[in-house]
Structure formats: C-alpha cells, structure tokens
Image (cartoon, rainbow, N blue to C red; front, side, top):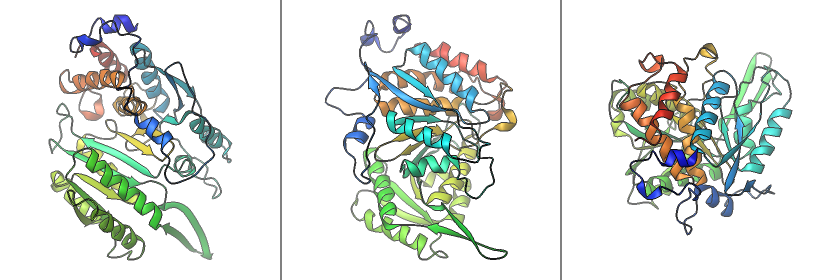
Length: 388
C-alpha cells in the first residue's frame, strides 16, 4: 500500500522509493511528543513507560458518543490507506454508569501511550458524585492548555474571510473545578478556582506559542471588572509575563465585549488567552464564524500527555448514524496527532487532501452548505491523497 501510494505522489519526488523511511524530521530534531516526555517541567508523576515499538506509536482511541464512533472509523480507514505508523488502542466509555471505572482505565491507557484521540464523551448520570468524563480526563492528566487554531477555509461560504485566530484556554480549573455545594436549603454555591501557578503556566504557554509561530499579539480575555480577585489574578499574571516578551504586543478585553468584537471584527485578534469557561464560549463563537462544529480540531496539552479532539466538543447525537456528519474536525484532529508524534509526512498527505476536498472540489456535508454524505467526503479525501 505504501509503495503504491508513493508512486502517485507528484510534489514530493525525492520520497519515491522511501516507503520504509521514518516520517519523523531530522534525527537531531525532537518531535513535540519527545519534548513532552523528555522535558517534564511542572508536575512530577510516576510515569508509565510510553508504548512504542518498531518506529510505530500506540495511541488511545476514545470514540465517545454521538457521531464519534463513525468519525473514528473514517480516521482508521484513512490511516490504513496511507500506512500511518500508528496502532490504536480502542477504549469505550459507557455514559450511563454511575462510576468512573471506564474513565480510570482510559486514563491508564493514555498514561501508557502518551497520546489520545477522542470524540466527545457523554456523561448521562446526574448524580453529583459522577464527574464529567471529559473534565476528569483533562484534570487527571493535568492537560492544562487547550489550543484551537481557527483558520478559514476558502471553500466554505462565511460572512468573514481569511480569519486566522488561535485560542489558548486554561483547561483544568475555573468554573470547571466542579466544586459545588448547597450552603443552605435552596442556595447553591459553585466555586471558581483560579491559581497563580496554573495562570502562569498557561500564560507562558500562550506567549511561547506566539513566539514560536511568528504571532504578533496576545489578547487576554477576562471579566476582572466584576470578578476582581479570580480574573484579576489571571489578568495580572498575563500582564506580568507579557513584560518578558517585548516583541509580542499584549492587550486585554472583557469577555462580553470580546464576543461582540469577534462577530463584528474578528481580524483584530491573533492569539487569545483565557480561562476555562470563557474558552468554551469563545471557541464555539469562532467555530460558528468559520462554518460550524464540523471543521476545526482542538489540542489538549500537559507536560506529559496530549489528547486531540474536534474543536467544539459537541456530541452530535441527533445526526449520528445518518451518514451526514461532517468528518473533517475528527480528521483534522488526527492530523494534529500525527504532527505531535513527528509523522509530518503522513500528516501533510492528509492535510493536502482535506484542503483540496474543501477548497477545490467543494465536496461538503450539509452543515457547511454542501450535499455530500460523510462517506463521500472521506472517499474524496482518500482519492486526493498523493495527487495534490
């Protein structure tokens, strides 16, 4: 399969006959995966050795609910077609149970493999002692930074063109600390937790991201005019760290004004830094501007582990099994994962094919104005691999 695929490639003639050459970059260059595992900085954990053998990587696959299982099937089909050096360890989490056994097993496999690919995992139980599966994964694995690269596809009709914004969201605290109690009958108190250490970690992550990727500005999104201590700490930390990066412009914006500005003038933003709940809101706003929930992928990073998923974390239960779900977000998440592992050749093959499918062929699902089925989109992507 790999030899047949390479024989079709037009733009990379130097790779002909190299079917068994590693897809990693130059030997002296570490992949993101290697950097993450060889340079832990913050949390000291007893790590399980990363599962890797014969130049391949084992990756935990969590299909989740709704359209997750069918989209994961498309990813497996594409990986098999291009010969991607990845072996998936499939883990299903039952959304109906009132315990965390499945989640703990999933966490163990991610610790063993170092990397996960996931759909949105439902938590149907309303019992107070049952935590959100998605939040539990992020908190237990200390994946403190969430990155969503919001870039327009020319082939998708939207009000605003040429948007290129990166959202960086604190991923483990804030309103998602899940600390609630009934102080007196009929009065519920919910704690918003903001710590100096996590604020500094994610702020430094944002400025380093901007520096490495040639970005010019970081905007801190907050509500410090009302939440003067919690958001005030987050904003103060961002301002302090901004002084260490004089080449990068820093400003701040209140969350409600930010949402209006995104809809009216999105091009003023470059890198956006925010706490957990604001990140959830802003991510959905920007995805809506670019065409909806089916296009963009998100990345969860910690010092030891990384998990990749569709950007808006929507389950899509209403359209599951109808062959109309947009598979692009999950496929893009798999591309992000391949890049993280250092398999840049395979990632580039898929990315080029996806871009041609959307921007040139205009083979689109109904959510972005097309008429194609999910399987037709995937088949078109596979047909474009090696031809663009």
